[in-house]
Image 1: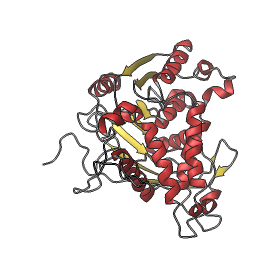
Image 2: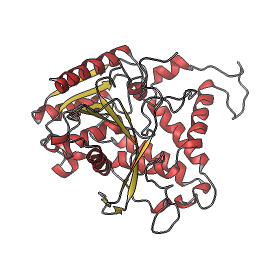
Image 3: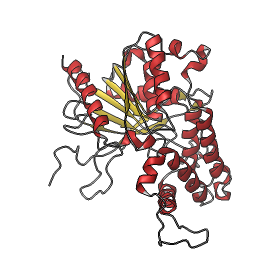
Length: 379
């Protein structure tokens, strides 16, 4: 039976750009491709478009399925579709894989036109402002002058914040969820440990493993296991796994004994099957570098001064990777800059991953705020 609240079977699209993209590092990305998906219909005046910005391991496939028997829907399928908070009966929704990604957009595994070989270690470092600039070109291609909303969680929230700063006239609402205006030292440390796991894997080959026919699975596996721990809460892990043993008794060895160990190894193995190691390095560096206040002597309110959007900032009580305190820092700066902002701190046991879940208060918050956006579009 067809789900009336699903966007159904979807297909990815590709947009090729011949004009080079000047990056924050000073490097230039020559002609490149962006892979994206759209859901819903763009209205006559193109005022109902919403951009979804993905997090570290996310991509353009945000909702729907690729065929009738597809077991894996888009990563935010619970939030996007007819009658869902991001209602495709009212909005035209766009998801895009950022440059440097490994899901169809130009990235390290793509062919470098200068060499005819995969970019590998030669792929330039990309930042959140670079991604937003690329997304703006896609918006131009789609004829979208102004987004009804730009929405993202975690690293995606940083992109929503950057959109409001870099293109203030092109964003009506920015929804910044489970995010931060910059990483803490602890977060940068976690990212570096994950990168070192990849960089020290002999199969990484300095980033040029494609030509060697190898994949740094061990490094990727460890990086994902570490990252996954930080995305969960202690209470959530305790409730789901506790100290449960697979065999019911201690085996006095170093193989998998606890259920949490089995879960983490499964997640690491699965991730290493489909994610690109160079992309992981690039994404974590983009997280590290994001700091819009840096060019304003550390004054976040000054950095947000140009923004004209209305903001929804949301955090989750059990998120210790991007704690509510970091969201309140953003809210405080927005208020100091005289901006319109709503803030919600949501009770959840899901940790940082809560922004992907369906906790009823979270769903109700998103629905209420986006109802307001829809009314403005239709006013």
